[in-house]
Image 1: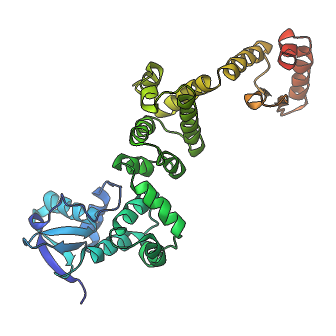
Image 2 (image 1 turned 30 degrees about the horizontal axis):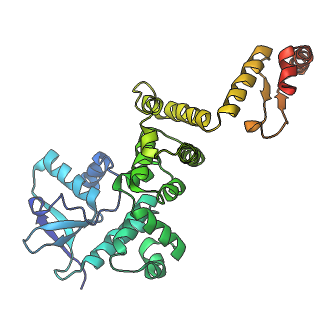
Image 3 (image 1 turned 90 degrees about the vertical axis):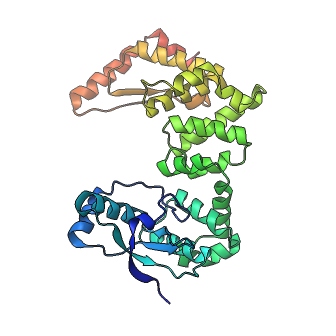
Length: 325
C-alpha cells in the first residue's frame, strides 16, 4: 500500500525530531516558498505518524519549512499537504525513504554519506550496505569505502559539520580518526578556525604529530601554546591568513634549521633587487642544490632588461653566497 496523500495540521508535526534528516544544508527557503506559492507543491513532504497522533518528517524538511513560511506570511492556514506513511512503517523503511529521496535528487556529500551509513549500520552490516548501495545511494559503493564511512561516523558530530563545510577533508578526517579522543578534539578546534586545502590540512596534522612526538608532549597540551592561540583566535585575521601563519609557525618548530636557512636565503634574494618579472626560487626545503631562475618578457626590450639584470647580479656577493653558502 502506498503512502497516503492527505492534509495535516502544522501544529501536529514535531519539528524538533530530526531523526531522518541527513542533509546538513539549512538553505534559505524564501525562493522555495515563493515557488510553492506561485506554482504549487509538486512533491509533498513525507511524514510518519506517531502513536500520539503527531507526525515526524521523513523527507522534505525544507519543503515543510517553506510551507510554514507561506502559511505565516500569507494566509495563516494551519494545514499542509503531505504524504503520510503507513501506520506500521518501520524505522528502517522510513530511513531508506529519507536517504533515497535526497540521493536520487542529487549526489550525497561525504558528510551525508557518513551520517546515512551510521544510521543504516543499525540494520545492515557493511557488506549488505555495499550490496544495496546502488538502490539506496544512487551509486555503487565498495565495502572498503563503506568501512571508511563507518570509521568516520565514530568521530564527534562537529567533525561532520567541518567535513560538510570543507574545513576538514575526507582524507584528513580519516587521518585524525585513528587518534585518541583528546587529540581528535584538538584538531577539530584547529580546523574550525582555519581554511586549508586537503594537502595543507594533512601537512598541519603531520607536523603537529611529529613535533609532539619529538618533544614528548600531548597534542592537546601543544595546542595551548600561546603562539597557536594567538594565531587561531585573532579576530583580525581571516581563516586563510590564520592558515598561512599556523603553517609557517609549525614548519619553524618542526624544522628550525631549514626555516632559518630559508629566511636567510629569502633575505639575500630580496637584496638582489630583481625586477618583478624575474622569479628566483631556492630548492624546496633545501633537499637539493638546484635553484630555479626564470623570467617573462613581452618584447625584446623586456628580455634584454632581464638579461642585463641577471648579468649585473653576477658580481653580487649575496648571489654567490646563495650558491656557495
